[in-house]
Amino acid sequence: MTNVPPSLSFNPAGIELDRRQGLSRQLYQALRMRVLDGRLVSGTRLPASRDLAAALAISRNSVVRAYDQLYAEGFIEGRVGDGTYVAQLPQNGLPAKKLSTNPSTGLSTGLPTGLSTKQAETPGVLSSKVIHNAALERMQKHHLPSPPSGPPRAFRVGVPAFDLFPFEVWAKLNAAFWRKPDLQQLCYGAPEGDARLRGLIAAYLRSSRGMQCSAEQIVITSGAQQGISLCAQLLVEPGDGVAVENPGYRAAGHAFAVAGARLHGVAVDSEGIDCAELARVTDCRLAYVTPSHQYPTGVVMSLARRLELLAWAERTQGWIVEDDYDGEYRYSGAPLAPLAALDRGGRVLYVGTFGKVAFPALRLGYLVLPLGLVEAFSRRRAVDVRHSEVSTQAVMAEFMAAGHFQRHIRRMRRAALSRRNTLLSGWPADIPGVGELPAIAAGLHMTVPVESVARERELIELASSVDVEINGLSSYWLPTCATPIDQRAGLVLGFAAVPETSIKAALERLRPVWRVR
Image 1 (spheres, rainbow, N blue to C red):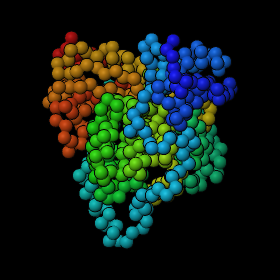
Image 2 (cartoon, rainbow, N blue to C red):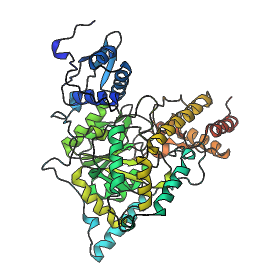
Image 3 (cartoon, helix red, strand yellow):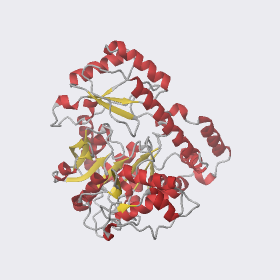
Image 4 (cartoon, rainbow, N blue to C red):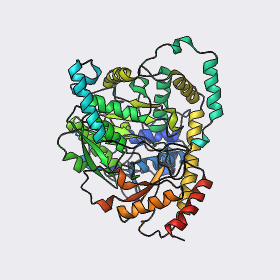
């Protein structure tokens, strides 16, 4: 056994576990907290799973699961033949002060909120016309095509396996609500959303995603896109710089552009958004990111990069909008903790949605906000939509409270994994001009490199001729991008929208038109 200096030894004393709760989750949180607050420094050797299990009087499997989650998130690393150690994190990516382990309850004292309230006020006639015309010009300049409609088909992006949704259960809960509705619920509701649903969302995020949040921090929205738009309206003044991933989710960039932002496309590498490039954007007050599963490349943001991004927000007093659109889908271990779970400075606004675990037409999402922003966001949302549709919120709350939601997520994850495997196993080999399949550890889609944009377009047109839907990676880049055009090419394929039989049939139709065996 390697000798470890006393300063780098690990003492499990002080770790108290409630045996009535999930032991592996508690152990994971306890170890993660000790890394973040500096009690476990980089290079500390952790006990073997069997030894730690004996010391805590729990099963070895509980320790292994906790270690696996910490390893997946980058907190620990294995050294061949030498055990498990706390990972070496770059000091320049850490905040100057230690990360607090207390939940964020709002903005740090003295921080400017930077909220734009102009659009929430009632301007005069002239200023209304100016605002209206400017917004129209920006919408025309940043026009986006509507998402595809109609029944899902292979390989539509952004659509879950909603053919598996328990519609009978939903119908019964909906009927029960309307059979004898609470008259108070039929009046005007709170603009921030149904209190019970907000509490259940907070409980879910605490137990399943490692976020220390409360119901008071949550604002219900009509899907993730409205949440992003609210961030754009309240955090951005015309002329402000906003960093977006490039390639990235164009509809998010559209929302910020319509609010008057000047978009800065920041490159994405194998660890996520390039924070060095972001730091060179001197006028940027907000960054929009998809760290759990970057859209569309599929990259999972590393822990070191997450800490760098949080340090950027603290240093510049900027905002981070985290879109966790399909974070529930991870195929090895539990879903990774969101970026917001690491935020203790009140700089991250978390965008969540039910559309990727239920069905897109549900139009139900939520924001998790620093407490200091909740009132402003609620008031701004009430200008456009007085409050969310009441019965949908009430039914979703009962759906969650009765345990259907968690069971459905597990079923959806298994289905997406099976459909992913069907696509991987049946994907045609040696397609001219197409690179190798990537590793797909999370999410609902994959991206395959292609040698040129011309070849990308040819493959997409041929696929369309046999009723197969494929998106081109080149369409996800900002028009002003400096990356050479042929380096932007690729095929973006969703694998969850249709059953395995439909995936196999689509692949069979592709082979002859793509001229592969």
